[in-house]
Length: 402
Ligand code: PMT
Image (cartoon, rainbow, N blue to C red):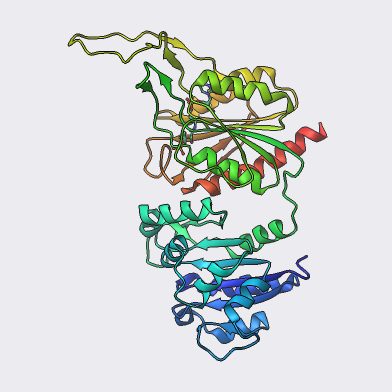
């Protein structure tokens, strides 16, 4: 499947370095030409000889080793390969990549290459969730670098949590999907809503909510990666639009309603991850409201329920809703799923640590109208999004066959 494809596997110094051997072996079985660059620390975890034998190519570690094939090896290798995967990618390597540091062979190739770069983070859960690591990952995503994993489970340091490197088979599947150019949603049109709507009270104040937009942006990225032509209707957020996604910026629930409804008839799948205000101020003051030392009442009027409206108008579209709950998660989510006529509802208890608003991770359950339910452990919002895309692909398949 990967005949003629040249892949550089970058290995950095974490205990998951042993999994690099399986990645290389799987890539070779798919007929890829595999090259390997290791950091010095990686060689403490796995011997270069092992990776040289599996890749059937020299392994690069030191900038100043005798050249193996080319004169300026880091540049020649950077230009030669079709794709780079760094697995495992330590917090240190992610930080170096984020600031463009090139102080060893691998980081220099990463700076010099124009090939697509994938990283598979692997580290202790506290290191993964640290704001510095999350900022670095966000910067890499902004630059078009694709993140695979990490997953949740037992960690080498003896704790449980998020930060385990994805399994070799999943990593190779992601690379194969990318290199063979075919996503599961190729030819499909998707629309995602993200962020929290803002309902103005006057020119300087609004009623809002805690949604950062991260969940919706991750879904837009995953849909685009899977080949769908993706439109992101976004309330104000700090995130950059994922590469290849078309963004339509809105502020209020009414603007979001118009932007979504206008496009709905041409869309195959809609994912409503946005936190939409259920009410808006009845009156928007033209000038800044002055304080006068007394109590004030704000009259609120209901906003339209966009998802419920889509549920009423739906023909062949696959409709995905979210439920952000603070109590009775499953009962409330099931009620929303039926009331809004969706094909799949993603339920998240937004009071749980590691889930909901603003967090880089989420803990969700997928509910289906036929009673099926899939519960997921804590995982990055991008992994939640990729799991959702897998379900969307099979729902679209079902819809098409009917
Ligand atoms: O953005 P992040 O910081 O990453 O946080 C992610 C998230 C918590 C916002 C996300 O995971 C999530 O749960 N999104 C849905 C939030 C929400 O508004 O839930 P709800 O239970 O109030 O609404 C149910 C569904 O109806 C949602 O799909 C919502 O988009 C939709 N809705 C709600 C009200 C309305 N007027 N119109 C709608 O379309």
